[in-house]
Image 1 (cartoon, rainbow, N blue to C red):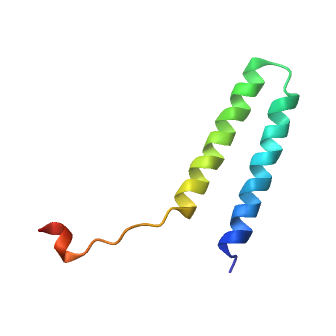
Image 2 (cartoon, rainbow, N blue to C red; image 1 turned 180 degrees about the vertical axis):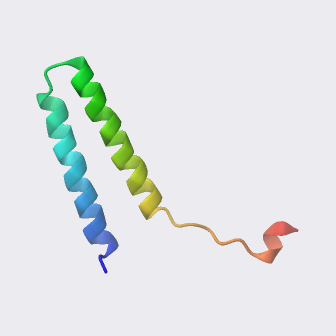
Length: 61
C-alpha cells in the first residue's frame, strides 16, 4: 500500500510536468488545456488528502 507521502510526491511530479508543459506551450489554447489538466490534478489531490469527517448521532440533534 502506498503511503500518503508517496501519493503526494507522485501528484507533485505530475503537476510539475504539467507546469513545465504550460511554460513551453506555444498558444493560449494549449495553455488553457494544460491549465484544465492541472486543475483536475489539484482537485483529485484535494479529495485524496482531505480527511472526511464522520457523522455522529449528536450531529443529527
